[in-house]
Length: 286
Image (cartoon, rainbow, N blue to C red; front, side, top):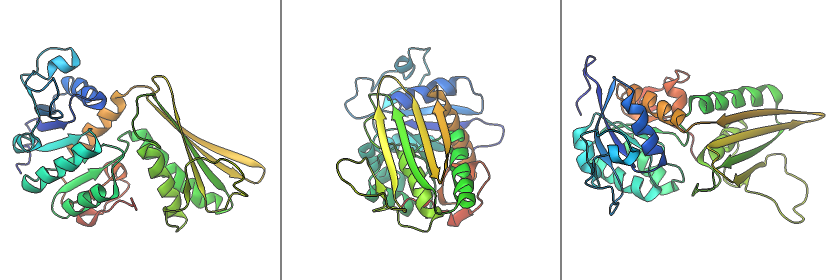
């Protein structure tokens, strides 16, 4: 792995380049001088494979053709950003084992075995796992932690997320991550305490429960609302994404930071300087 020289742009590979987030990332890269696209990986069988990646966004040519082999992209880059699908990420991890490169994974809906594989790779490669690369969402997570510590265990937490009709996974990775933060803050296991919707005579709400509701419609980029409900009052924390490019900007910020880090598993709060755990970095994604 060749660390990028300070005076040279960071050589970047985009994995999932032909998807919604991949295209947003490509658009943002055009306006930056500190990163240079050297590889764009699409899914096998995609009609874009072999074409200049500029055609994907409808803009000028990049001089970079879409490929379908992650290993080829890894060999060419200093750092990789992945916005693909769980099965594609799983194939990518196998390639990273052979060609280690710092990797930002923004793909959502990952299974526990895939997350376990990421953790294993992080023992020798800097890996950043973020179901949401928004800086604002990272701040939202910190505010949630502060609120839970101040309000105490008597306050109930409910999470509602809204996304566009084309989103494949539900609830969102961000909503699940926020629910897990509640579990961590209260010293509970996330498994079994998160409830995805309610119907029928479910009885009184257990104090340790966190409700997560997924709503879908239109072209909503992303919205997450946390209801913290206490005796006689309610606190709401809300994040609304208006433009998909904000996730691209966050992912690039993470990539530029990650390439300078030792092996470990990181998250967006590390990028913002709220955690300095170095090679022993872990993310509470139980």
